[in-house]
Length: 117
Length: 117
DNA sequence: TATAAATACATAAGAAAATTATGCATAATT
DNA sequence: AATTATGCATAATTTTCTTATGTATTTATA
Image (cartoon, rainbow over all chains, first blue to last red; front, side, top):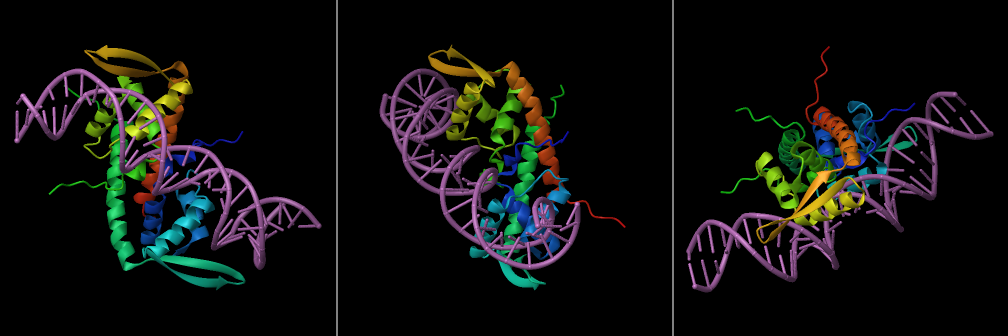
């Protein structure tokens, strides 16, 4: 019997860009497929980034100057490597602050501190 | 100078329903406006639920039998109270498990444990 | 006391951000 | 030989918000 807690994978709607920024900040230079695999691994299969969400977002981020790309050949197969630009690094810091605030807010709601008194 | 960390409030896309479920689980019976105020308070102004998101979602949840309503008059002003149905309570448990898994996944990504070795 | 802000609901139009489906191609596995 | 994994891309659709608008009562403020 296959077990998967998160059927509703849409919880991370809106968090994808900060997730990618974080990956790139930590790992320096990554290609798209690699990002999906790393997220799957880190989250033990919980978060599965779909290609239809990933690639258009990466393209948008490139247009906006947040990331820059280098295409390399791995044997006969192409890999398009993404890395943060200077502006992208700045924005990553902002995004991480936002994420932390957001996660704390979720924490407050999902695990409310009982009022003692 | 006004200070607000989370300019990008769209981070919680997809998390609104579980948030409402949690509120109703904890507080038993609430009306819409009350939910917005409570979330604002709990999150110290971080999460501001818009009415355009809230009311249609509540209506959908009622249609789906997750919540049921009672309308009461407070003076001359109407309040529509929402509470979890039996099915709603079941679903809340599922949603909370999903939320916890999701939050842990975010934690793994945003605060990765350094590999020691 | 007039005006604004807060309380309380509702809905429509539009935007944002996913999912799902499809397509192409190579490499590895069964 | 056929399937799965790797690796990219995009179009159509759906989900889920934001923004704007509308109505109405109560409270606070200038």
